[in-house]
Image: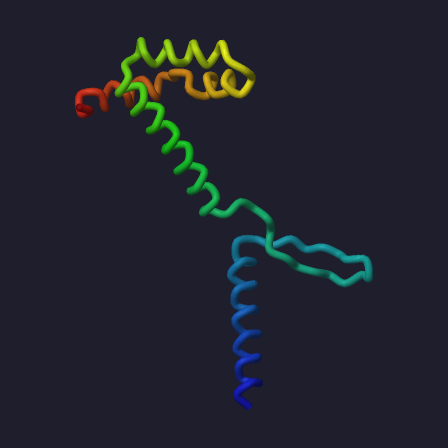
Amino acid sequence: MDDAQRRFEQRCRTVRQKHLRMAGGYVTRLDRSGVILQAPSQRARPAVWRALTLAFVGALGIKALILAGMGAEAYEAKRADLIAGNGVERAGALLMSVDPLTARVAERLGPHLP
């Protein structure tokens, strides 16, 4: 009886999880045999957007810290060395270019760095 109860609890947990996923939207499809299937939609979940935002803000912060720590002239000199390098280095130089947001954050961080 204990094993049957455990299997029942597992089935209930699976149904609850599917219902929670389907609460965010679902897609109805017809399979080859003519059976109608409903499955949760494959939209990006908020956690994915949160992770992407965190990665973007982290990269922006690192760029701003490097710019504030080195100074604009030294930063541009390093970028010029990267631009003269191979394809990977040129791509890195493109990503590390100073945009207005990075410059503004670096200006605010500058006085707080040793």
